[in-house]
Image (cartoon, rainbow, N blue to C red; front, side, top):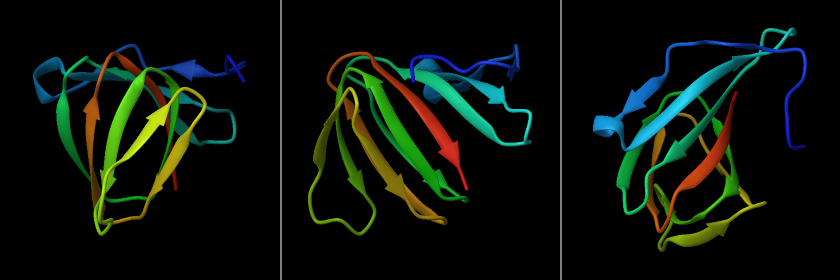
Length: 104
């Protein structure tokens, strides 16, 4: 799916790591929320999360190491990965990485 229809978008951006990751929250009629964002090229970031997340990569290339995994894996456009609740993941963006994050 290339777009979300019939949603609301929170105007204020979510800015993390001094602007190395920027996203906007998208609110769906059923009450669910996703974020749509970008991680800047060359960024190496660690996210600590409370709720489970599904990260869909919509463009770009990144290396991701999820807490507990022995090695990082490469993700490109069209790929996705899951992160369990109360966990973390490290991401290294080779270029601009666009993503959609689903929660729960």
